[in-house]
Length: 142
Image (cartoon, rainbow, N blue to C red):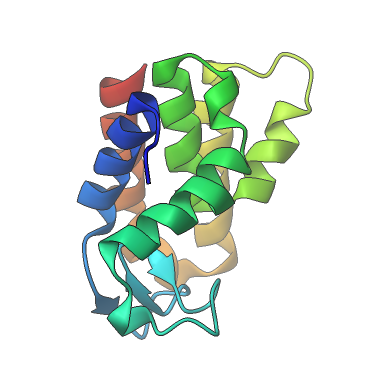
C-alpha cells in the first residue's frame, strides 16, 4: 500500500504512542494492537493483527474518513492523531463548526479528556498520558 508521506509521518507518530499488543482490562478500548481496539473492531482477531492490516485500517477508517489529507501536512497529522485517540466522529463534528482551526482542536481535545475523567474518575490514571500526547502532537505537527 503506497500512501502519501504526510500519512506515513502521522502513522509513525500514532504507532509510537499506541505501541503493540495490549490487553488492559481497565482500558475502555479493551484489547488493542497497534492502537486498533477490539471494541471498535469486534470481529477482528486483534492479537493476530499485522502492521500492514493496521496501516490499511488507519488509512481508510481514520485518515481518509477524517479528511486529514485536505489539510496541510502538520495539521492533517494532528487531526489524524485526534481521530485515532478520540474518534473520527468527534473530529468531523469539530470540522463542521465555524472557525475550525488548530487552537479549537487542541482545546476541544483537552476539554474532552476532562469530561471523560469527570464522568469516570477511575480514568484519571490516563489523564497525564493523554495530555502529554497532545503536547507531543503539538510539537510534532504544529
